[in-house]
Length: 177
Image (cartoon, rainbow, N blue to C red; front, side, top):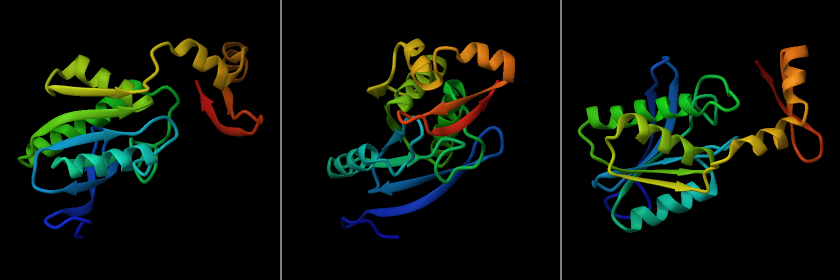
């Protein structure tokens, strides 16, 4: 499908990760090397930050690919709380896919939890020259207490699961240890 600018193509692409799950993303291609954009916790490739960044990078003559980590958005798999290394491996599958298809990956940009994924990816693979972490968390201990409650370890030990709740005490998901 044609994009918004002359010479630009926008299309949906599915990429298999190392577990055989389809990762679904949007390629906005203007023929240049590309930047891969990664979403945050409980988000998707359609997040406003990522769509705005994609638009801006396209205007600067960079192609972009924004995708859903496994278990998020349109991608296959199950959501897992705190799956930082799993996200980094999904990102590895995406980078490998584009390189195998003759594309140069110039940069990785991650927002929130995606910011942690790009840093973990870089720490393991060291093969992308530019990595941008936008609002990635650096001290996760308090975030876990905020989302799971003070007694989360006791609940996990007693029940083998804990509920993740929002600010209004509504259960968002159950996590299994």
